[in-house]
Image (tube, rainbow, N blue to C red; front, side, top):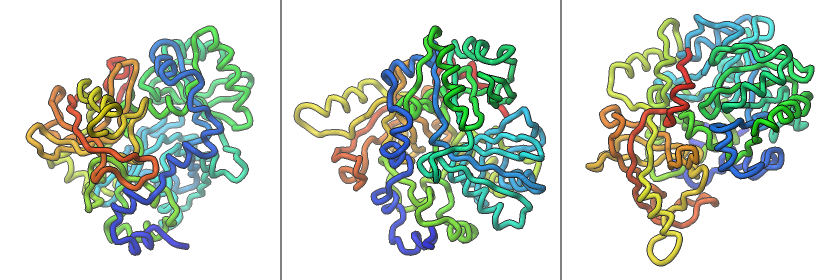
Length: 465
């Protein structure tokens, strides 16, 4: 079997390969089976975005997120050693934002972790790079663990998942849940979990918000998907509930400030060679698809750290873990931090105007999501032209009526209100990616803001460890 390491050894320029020749799993899913399972829009993405702010919205997460189940005598030992996250507060009624780093302190990936007790073990939801990292160490590290991988629907043998998964949120979500849950909706603290009964089905609940608002993730046996969804839709009909399609779903990070799928920092370093030899050449990591204006021959320029992703608050030095020494050193040095960029309206309008008439045609800004790489990396510069970070996830939010992007910025330029300049469009008129049209590069002025951008999300989302 050809491995990721074989691909790297046989590829003269890995950045050029990832920038031009790969087809990301994200773009495959948008045009493949997933597109037939969940509509791009049930009404319009604009009304679906408004619903999470004004009424309620239902996201169907049942098909696109892979899941890894880990149990056994050494399950906790394994997961704790792989992550900077503390396990001192581990309990069956509390979830975690779980992430891992390399020995050099570069981000590998992140996911949501649920704990069901010693017998059932752990559930790691979404994030293929971190799931692969855990699987590798579980298989090769001498741990007494049992792992079961549940791939997303397009890759499942029979198209069946182990669990359905919905996200319900918005100002009317509480009333909907109170009606459909037997005995009413229980009080659940943010990022805590419980069980409820809906339409006779036992449903696991995680209290959190995908779009940065009060809500809950509901999961249970896949065979009960329709029964639970029908109950939600019936109760939500009189409360303005809208189902959200994939176009709307993928725009949620712009409101809650979560940066999806940064490039895992695993392509360099002899200490990770065994891992790259374990990963197949058709793995998610081998098909990451770089895009955007940042074009560097050094792939490490695309790597992220916990501080750049806003995860520094989750790093706890109360245990030994891979990358601990590197993260301790990072804490003492200047670093990049997560911020939201609000794009200047005049520059956005200029790019839209370039699509008509004479003159240069700039890279089109799609709506509601404007990124075209997976991951995307756009140059971010100071007013005097110094490279100070990179912008990744970008698009439009109708609730704020703003074009926004999520970025990592050097601390010296991260003060809210700082003016920065984003380079928009790819070098040389565009890459060979089939979904990228010919275009000219330009710049977009932007203002630095704290993440998340919306005041509603800032008030409703609280830090959790």
